[in-house]
Image 1 (cartoon, rainbow, N blue to C red):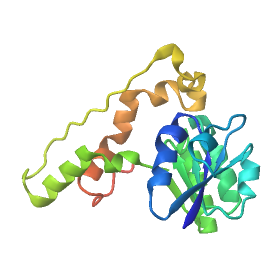
Image 2: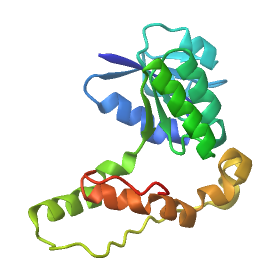
Image 3: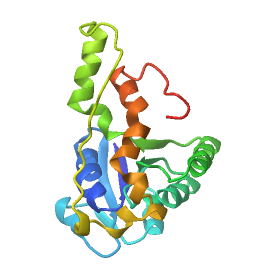
Image 4: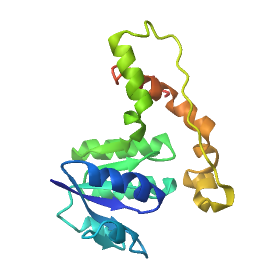
Length: 201
């Protein structure tokens, strides 16, 4: 059993990571970093709530850490976890710059650690269906794929960082940009991950 420490319990931690971690055989949601609330403990009785990342990292019983903080903090949080010799899954985007991502990749490689981007869309039913159709030959040769990701933006109810480009929000997080970034990845998923994405994808 791998005991998992979750960094952050906002929407990403509450809606995606917490439920997924707690539902996977072999993983145990053991601890969460929440700075001032105890929402995770109310939802997952028995877990430990830490107020700081440092306290979480001091828990030697944890074997995997998941970063679910605002996008602009992903690089620093992931770097601190890797520097503590811990494996980490980072919610997308891993960072807001390719240079920082390269730095994290090198750090993980140097320490023989896992640095994994969270790709929750890989298991969506539409991708799995396309994958099956491609593999059994039902569609013939694929020449065009159109996939739509709808996004609801509630405006003033959004957290301020989500509209701040310096924090990974704003233009960086807008659907058009996300679609351009994920287009080749979507096709690769549909093909079952058999082909490498183009370097610029």
